[in-house]
Amino acid sequence: MLLSYSSLVSTSNLSRDNALRGKSIFILAGQSNMAGRGGVVNGTYWDGFIPPECRSNQLILRLNAGLTWEEAREPLHRDIDIEKVCGIGPGMAFSNSVLKRDLGIGVIGLVPCAIGGTNISEWRHGGRLYNQLLSRAQAALHGGGGLIRGILWYQGESDTLSHQDAKLYKRRLVKFFTDVRSDLLSPVLPVIQVALASAEGPYIDEVRKAQLEIDLPNVKCVDAKGMKIGHDGLHLSTEGEVQVGQMMADAYAQFFA
Picture 1 (tube, one colour):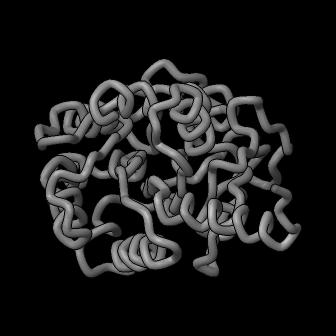
Picture 2: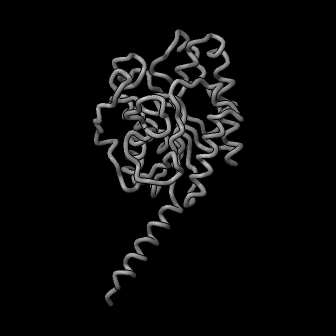
Picture 3: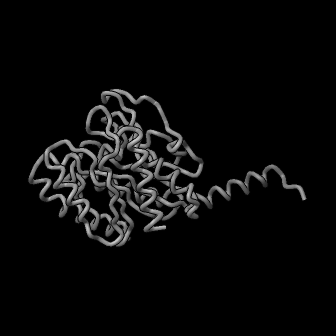
């Protein structure tokens, strides 16, 4: 039996709608190395190079600044971290790596929320960045449904500037993770965080120690130490961002898939 063109279109649209409703949502949060500075030259422009691991895929969507789902493409944070030039981050490499493993995860929906130059206190409960993250997460769920599968978190470089901030980092980070999980009504929501590869200040060891020692259920840490850093000495290169994204995918597959 032959189907009419309109029937085929309706079937295609229905399949797409079903895929959207079942999408796996990941929140990308933190500061510049999550927002992505891979390929950014002198902080003034992005070189435009997209490695194969970060190329667009129709199964990877992005919630843009207008709270609309669209096919994800680099730079993921281009309309979110608007005060700085964005380049390659870990989000696309993470997503493509997860999909390649065929974990039955379906459509991936990325929710970029990272803002460069922010310290952990700026992500406190009730603050602007915290509220923006919650609003975008809720919009992601309402915009076609799906399930929040995890938070990808890369932050802490700014907290290495002050000994006081470094000393309080662990307590503040634990509170942030606990608060976000509570407000998202998901007390054991998977979190994959990154231990710093570089720092703005002298207290990197204190912050890294705090990150590596976080002991909360379903919080896993991947270590970016040794990843390739760009010419500015602070931000990961494109290669480094890809490696971090793939390490986060490894952690997701190992602990949460």
